[in-house]
Image (cartoon, rainbow, N blue to C red):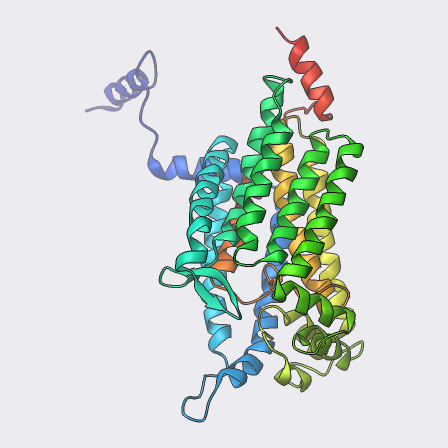
Length: 411
């Protein structure tokens, strides 16, 4: 075949109704290029920075937790938790990046599916769940899985999906639907009991219904019901009562918060140095719930302040990204997901500072965890997917009422 014949055949392949197949490698390269253009790179950088902090923090806390689990007959390796954390961080990072390639519709479908499955598991947790420290919150599936951790992002996605129905029919009682959904989940969580997660779900619900236009008078009324609920929890749930009493100084059975506060201040402004902390050796759950205190002892309060700033920057960046959003579902889902992440982080930090009762929540992206690490990365993967957008497209933005009015004006 001469050069002229080859050129004519090549022209025929690329003209008319015939399109030459695009090589898989090129399709992948084009998809990655589009992803890199649309992803919020600043948000991704902040997430990676917090994950890097988590690797160092778990390395500092791992010897203390290993020592507490060791017995005379069996010695737990000092860096067992650190090595496992590296594995789960790697898996979590891969999961997050894979999810960030999803379209908004695919992210919505996945969030709804995962939320439905985890809600079903939440019904059976009190029956077949593993009991730890007087609470049944985990199911053994090869590793300890806490359904409520994966239900949090699913809850945000499902609520955003229901609230976005308002655009199709402004008369639908969508806020009543999501309120009933939240009430069901809160009741199931209190059967475990799990007051901390119930409060966090309540925070996610509150932010989303506020954005959806719930009147302040109704919010005040619901706030009163929340106070009644907390009072009932204090009266009828020993776990909640002991934690609140310990926070207020009325009990000694649950004094982890006091130990955490003394640990975080032991290092002063600059810390004792890596692996030189002493108080952490007596701190329960040093690698999970109270890892922020370990950071304070070994790296100092200045580093703790920098970590708080990183969390604030991540939350604010996500909110700024959502301010110009003209897709109601994306606005509500993104707000719900970042509320979950930021709320969990700041509750954990306040507990370590002895400003909030102990809730058994990990510090997202920093604490050691198996399913909890994967759940946080799942949440952030959905957030990255939902906040992706073409930088060359203009956005209308606006409140819920403005979005509805524009929808009604369009033919």
